[in-house]
Amino acid sequence: MNNEAQLKIDGNKGYFFIEVDGKREAMMTFVFAGEDKIIIDHTEVNPGNNGKGFGKKMVMKAVEYARENGIKILPLCPFAKSVFDKTPEIRDVL
Image (cartoon, rainbow, N blue to C red; front, side):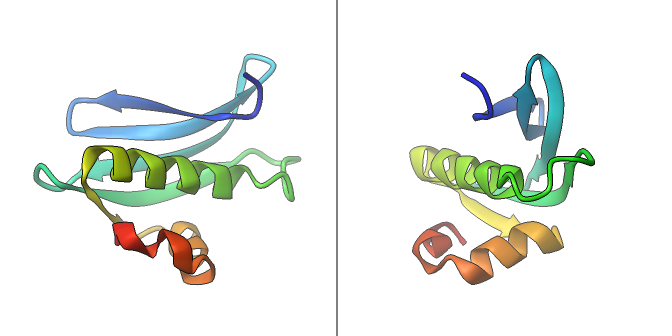
């Protein structure tokens, strides 16, 4: 599945990422805060991918993950925060 956000968890931290043709083009990192919250701390998208919506896809994947696992998201990353600010329907996970 191309351009779909994927999730990797490593201990108390993890990241959402998007690969295109086997190359990681975007990544959004987070850490667990206790058992029931993740803190999104950084989003980066490789040059040349502007306007493809990769950042928003990763935020939406985080929202899906939070809903499935009954956890909340604290978006410290300014980009992630801006997506929540613009998208009222995902604020249930804040």
